[in-house]
Image (tube, rainbow, N blue to C red; front, side):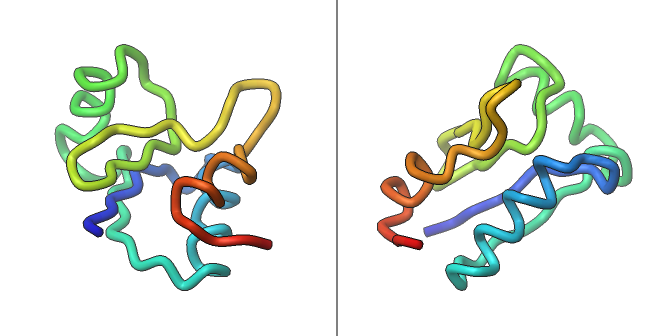
Length: 84
């Protein structure tokens, strides 16, 4: 599986997403949208808004959180085939 995570240092949900991946030993490449030229525009082009974190799993964009609810643990555990 090829996983890229679009993040920013100030983003609480991004830290939670990375913690989830690290806890389950899921390898990923991180792209900071504020430090990588064009990254924020790429998120906007694929998602329709500047919403992070975003996972790109084998080319498919997945939003691992829901505004107001936070990180979607159950859905991401199912998606990655892991459990708490």
